[in-house]
Length: 203
Ligand SMILES: Cc1cc2nc3c(=O)[nH]c(=O)nc-3n(C[C@H](O)[C@H](O)[C@H](O)COP(=O)(O)O)c2cc1C
Image (cartoon, rainbow, N blue to C red; front, side, top):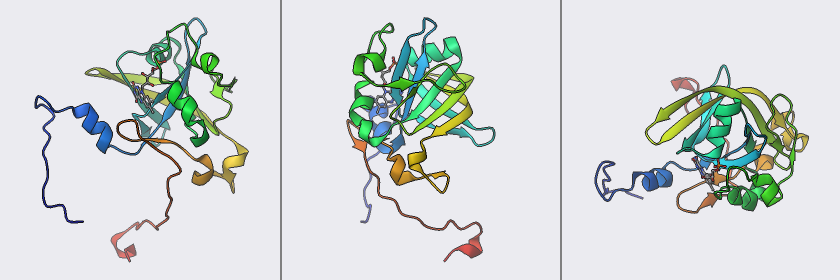
């Protein structure tokens, strides 16, 4: 398809909703389903699609809280969080856990999502998610209305059912992705192609 004409959206222009555009074009986004614990011991669970790897070595992941939310407060208070993989069959539960529950309400309790103890940190993990990433707080970075949260990865748990030859298998992980509007990516089609390490590898 030839792309002959482009509409320009300047972020600073009135009438341009940069957030809506950004979430439409930075796609697909993985979803960190973050469990955390308040200082009072209330278990919190909320999806965050502003999520990625921040550092390879040491392993650090990051997500962004847009505004001050229970997850951010908990992580700042306790210094611990768990990123659960947003598993395809749990779409409704992941979505419902994004509702604005009061700080003293626990999403897993309200929604009937079964949690189980983590290994190295106090926030529990989602039992029916095949992956949990247990983290301690590395640092936060306030940017405008948002706060980037960096988590030092302490350990990963991966359900044996989604391991093939000891490695997590994408099809079995079946991760959800966040797209624009109210859209989600489910069951992404996978293709494999060898990466050229040097220009002479290119075929
Ligand atoms: C798929 C999905 C992705 C989301 N991603 C983010 C995000 O990256 N950052 C954010 O602040 N809120 C995000 N939200 C909204 C939060 O989940 C929502 O505000 C939630 O109530 C926060 O919960 P908490 O107050 O318990 O932390 C997302 C919602 C959905 C459904």
